[in-house]
Length: 497
Figure 1 (cartoon, rainbow, N blue to C red):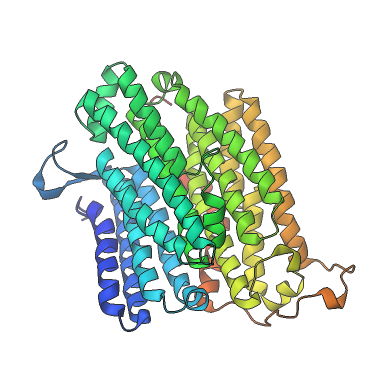
Figure 2: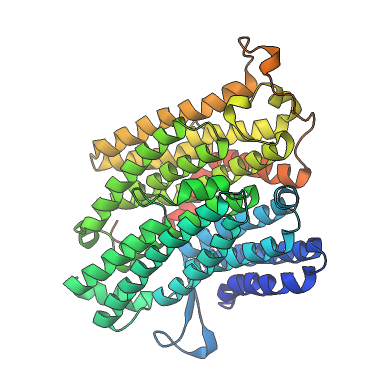
């Protein structure tokens, strides 16, 4: 029998794992990494149990110390949070598996501190999703952010500057969020999400509450890297180590998107009240701008990691559009795209790290079709994830874009439909540019211009298997999208949509 205590076990396992890693691995980093792997596997197991319990019994709630909310701290697993916990812990587990060989290659002698920091990031991300209190969400937000700054700083030479820039902008975002909490608490006297939802359902949104919500919106949007508050992301993802990027990029910004979903659609309520808020329309238009901006900038990049970083800005825009549409179809597309993009982007960054290990670089102009012979499985994993990013059926990426397009058509929001179609074309441009070099002969290149450092073997299994597993999962998710939408996403659609 799955009890409500499972709600708190996920962040607790990560937190204790992060504390034990230095104790176990202070002499041998590999031993600390083994502890991190065990903690990540345990958290994934508990998240699956929590999702099964929610599907069977409905939402689970646990009150720490027996203190009832709003005084006590409450952890809640509802369909949305349970679903996202599985996404976070699943990607986190694969990222920890990937970490060992990647960190040993790019940042030797840093495996133990890296593993501990990775678990702290996962502690914060999982806690943000599962907490039932907006202030505790802020606490977990800062835990993940502080550990994330450190992870990014341990990378290439410009990584420290990128981390400092991220620190500055992240601090601004956290300050906006905290000020927003102060306005809400000053007016309503509680920060418990269930209490806030009940109060906002029976009262009009006052000016003070509106300012508080705007500040929450700005703080979450900055953490989400939503255009035009995206400035920290390209350098952070490009110059961080491959293992750090593979952990943060797929799930970090998505959890910030969860904050917007929780505040704008659950606390305020969807339907008539939600549709009258300019924040939702603003979110949708900023998302459309992010999709176009990120896609165009991705086309211009010659470094694979930087191309994927700008692609992430565009993909965040899809989620923003789905939430901003304020409809069941748009919500379905947004939540489904959180899952799809986590798998797609993690697989792509996993492959990028493998290329850096074997080739010593990930510069697109230096790729040749020797890659498909030297690294056939890595090339295939990249190709499948890229096709899903473009949105070709039956991959998972097609179906989230399909629901977003249906949501735009349902509301006659033709601008957003045009953005979705145009962005898919741009996605095809920058991904097919890479696939062309990987798979097609280019007779115009002289033999002297071909790179001589191509290793004639695959990436190590610990780096290859997570990429292949996630790329394969994109087909499984695509083919099983009806079950996911009906059984998992359907129950979490806010009332009034």
